[in-house]
Image (cartoon, rainbow, N blue to C red; front, top):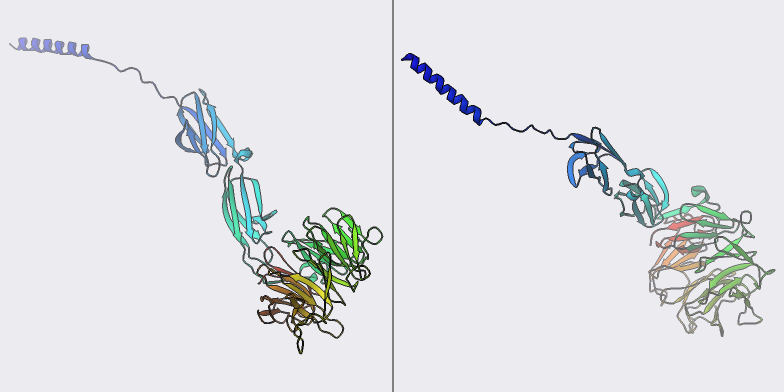
Length: 498
């Protein structure tokens, strides 16, 4: 019996193993993934690496693995830079390398527009000056963060942090804060050529042209000055009384050697030997509505010059009774107003002449009211209301001052304010009148001139302000509203207040 059992187990085992052999299966041989590599580097580093539009998760410099041997669209994304796309071929059996240099691609550059209030501030990137001044558009800049610093004399530095991006315009703007209200530009403080000045005129809102009694003409742009005299230019003399700037930016200089025109390149001299000007001692100039020039001389009357011909007016052929011309102005209607040193003020409307002086401008009464203080007219201007203002210096023992014209031959006098000798008057954008006094600094009047107490006077002298000298011969107002004063002995003075 035992033998039978053994035989049966053997047979069953044979059946079992035979069945297993028939049902056994095998998997195909596994294909390993390709492991071709791509090394990507860039300057600067830190760009995200994309292949066929998909983020690989790698940042330059880095190696992307497990690639097939084929072409890929490689994209690098770097902050502030324009995305860069390039087709690369990953090859079998070797490491493929790609290097992209952003610094050599001009298309990666950006633009920074810089501006300040006030303008003409020097632009620095960090501690390094760009040599440029606001407002300006600085192009071809490498993308990145720029710490922009604006520097202007008399103001706190303005600081702006700006990111420059590829193919974009970014803006760096700053409003600068005043640090000084009064600035005295002198030989001692700024190495200015001289402290003795006659007149200041402003071109393009910020360029100062300063005439001097012995040093020619000084051009000052808030940072640098250029001197023009008879040794380095065609200016025939170093004595310049007055400068007028016309609409074409020509500078007309009144000198003791004639009238000089300077167009920034060429000098033209008009004197008694080569032109129809009546005298070489030229004191003042004004520009007519038609572009003609009206030129006052110290002892030969006044002349009109239309760039071609000359017309001379003197006591022998006009209503003038004096040849001693101190100043000339043209009002918006084209009427000429001529101030003399000894005969008062003349009005000429191109046909008729009329004279205003100490004896005929007071309101009749007992005693007469108002009127011009004397006949020595130093300066003439018109305010924003169209009112004529006249400044008078001393005439012998007669004190001067200022007066406003209210029509019908009547002048309102200000015989105490601003001073007893007024050399220059100008008007600001708010219709304030500013007076340059021969001895008393400057004065401001905010009235209309309807009477001698319809406004408030403010006086600025060496006793109560930072002005360096009380003898002010000229005042000009720049585009920012700052007052520039030519003083006789105290150099060029800037006042930023109002």
